[in-house]
Image (cartoon, rainbow, N blue to C red; front, side, top):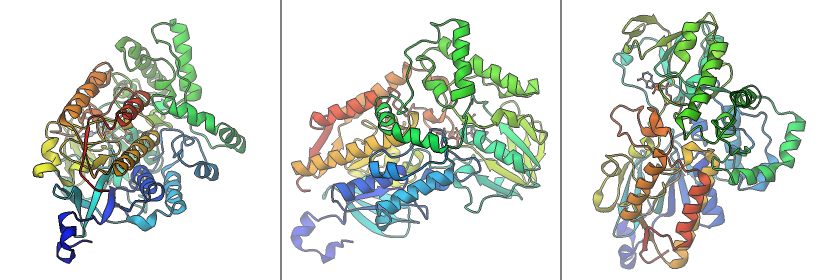
Length: 551
Ligand code: NA7
């Protein structure tokens, strides 16, 4: 660490920072960013990671049933052919422990751990305008200076535990799915209450129900969910995936969602009812997963009438699956279009409600009043519970960054800057916060697309930008306010042309009381986004001010 008193006078006027880059987080983003900066660019970088190990999302979300909703052979890195060749996935949608093993393997293979400081949170970061670097403070009281501060803190890593009255007096155990105990939870013989029916709640409920004495699910908003059709890969499957790897990679790169699906340029309204139904049936019964949204029709997210055909189909399937018609009706979403909230996929979710030990409670009709020492009380009655599971999501996209006291030019805090909602240029930089890059930041497509593809594009864009700065002798890059304003307007215009704003989703911050309602992701897809980012770079980092002398 540099201390001003130990330096020569010329160093004090233009001191060298301790590190070229500090990276926050050791998940998919942080690991690749470190590899890229250190091993490709030859820079000094250190990752600070709050967990005791690598993995990010896949380190924290250890709840039973946690698995990826994208298929394994394209929910992974593509930057290293050797890595792809040596790793074998066990199944179509791998479970959390397997994805964590993959990321641990990546950390070992590229010898990343030596530059990761575990069990350490970044608590504050201040931009030193005089020197064009960041001073970063950790919860252990250490301070480091770095030319670049790169957030790889993730979009869904700040757990949301709603502020229910009485939780502190609950006599049983309670858990948030996003910070699940490493030793697991034994539900046998327990009366379990689960709050939340998003992607997580939909994955965890069948697993809890299979163990617990009883499971009471408190649902605020019913959700459309599509069967995942998970399966173990056979040797023949693996051989086929291996043979098609380059083709899959090409298709992923050429797809707006970062998925290798064949996109069909057809409206749901341009086919007969019988044809439409047979396309949906095929997707529901055979293909499953995100293909229902991405590879059936091209206007499900754009046109309410087209969307209604998909929503009606799913509601029909819920009625077919769930034996009790009243429960089926409660489970059928009617207040938002399909896909306007992050669409879950499942294994036996709706079937779970046919079990004798599972009860559904509609907390929109009967709001949760309080947690009691012995359970939970809604407006209509009390439920005795031994365990409470919060599958209540995250303060998405902004929560992790805003937990850090980040101060940019003239001491402005990020919290002040984002008081009216997050504002970025390309989701990569924030005017007033030079040399800070946000991997998968608000204003980028990340959460709407296959995440590792979005991450690789961001990491590579950031490292190319740093190479450019070093070649040109710049030490400071800052998004222009005009460029940022135009980008925020553009993100909104694109969202307005979709159905995304028709739901109270975490995309809009609507799940966090008091959070400004702003649509955060960029909905034009990866192809459009990548081409805009590339154009900015080709035009000499248009919209950014590159200044300062040094490397
Ligand atoms: P989500 O998708 O935000 O789901 C959270 C669920 O918790 C959802 O059903 C919420 O109802 C419910 N919730 C949140 N707060 C409350 C309160 N106060 N009372 C009752 N119910 C509540 O989080 P997930 O973890 O499932 O998924 C997050 C992402 O991880 C997912 O999108 C994937 O990208 C992976 P609501 O719908 O807001 O009415």
